[in-house]
Image 1 (cartoon, rainbow, N blue to C red):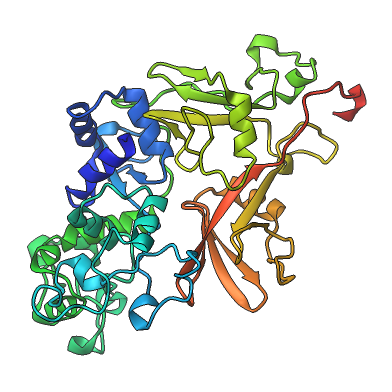
Image 2 (image 1 turned 90 degrees about the horizontal axis):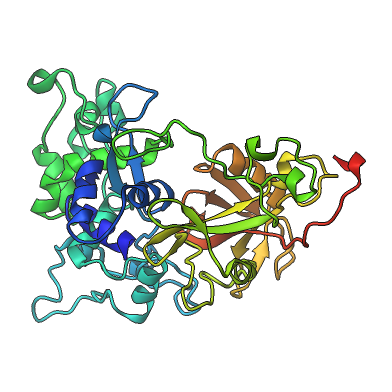
Amino acid sequence: MLVQVSTSLLCSSGGSLPLLDLHQMLLQRCRITEEQFCSMVQQCPRFLLDRGPGPAGRLRAEDCSVLARTSLRLCTLYPRGGCSESESGRCPNLHLCKYFLLGTCRFGKGRRACRLSHDLRSGHNAEALRGCMLQELQEEQLMVLMVQNDPALLPEVCVHYNKGGCSFQEDCTKLHLCQHFLRGGCRFGSECTRQHGIDPPGRRLLEERGLSEETIQQLPLTYRNIHVLTTAEKPPDLSVGDVGETEEKTEICLHFLRNRCRFQNGCRRVHFPLPYRWEAFDGRTWTDLQDMEDIERDFHDLFNAQSLGAQPVDFLQMIRGPQPVRRLSTASSVTKPPHYTLTTEWLWFYKGDRGGWVEYGKPDEKQRTTSETSRTLEERFLSDSSAEVRVVKGHREYVLSFRDMYQRNLKHNTRRRVRRRPRLISEPQEVPADRT
């Protein structure tokens, strides 16, 4: 519920809020500790924490803002005669009239009905919203979220215009606006030679895109948010009011599992008798989940988006009720020599044509393999967990986004879910001393 309430607040405020403002608004609506709040905005993929214009290095909460993001898109094939993926349920995008979403569809309000859906609660659209945990949003809030995340809804800002001149002038299909103004940092102010407002050609372009007057007025903030969402880097760890100085232990010690850790209490890694550990944040500290072995078993089943107990863990958002959840593990196998045992071998899968899960690098039902394997993806993920990776399978090219865990076909604008799950490993055993 906490994620949904936060998303609603952000979308009701133009898509973003100062960090401390969002914290205060949440305190008025639900019980949440500072630690829970910090964990949510940093770990939940729904939110992006922007460090703001302050100096590099130490992160200050008063400089930060939080932006709402989503991988949900409008299906581009649906308005052009239908989407072949809709009947199989594999299309994750909304089958919806764009102008209805933007609030300007002239059909459906009079005698002539629109040929495209205006129903957010239809079977397909309801499933798409549930898949992204957006089913509680009102139409206006969803519109704000989609406009700042779906690149097909707004025209780009013209690069040539900002570099000195655009030869297309009024016929240009991109927006002529000062990019520094849109990013909140034009030093010339009212004396700038480039537009800080929407001129008549720009207004016509936006109206043709179906944007309402209210949406057009919000464009400076919207484009600023888009810029942050597309260029942001991961900020340092945050604690509300300040930044913590201590390094938290999050990796389970391989040597302790073999009863051979010479550092004892001074070890920089976690001492735990299993190669995994499920914990929830209770507002003060991380505590063990009593049913972690059941949760681990459910986690290995790729078809499970959550555990199966009375208090399920959401594996996509890593929450249990209002509490953040995390899974500690031993070092990834790609970071250690092959003879190391009890490392965590992470496997990467995408949703196949027939609804099953296919491991990257392994043949699918048509004996086609991807250019990337579980190992190469894991190496790239550890190098940059927000990167996008080009994947080729047969004659088709895809882009895998680590940030939202989807694989996209850029030509057809379709998506497939991606999952990273560990290979099941046995209980710790004694290992000969010369092995490590």
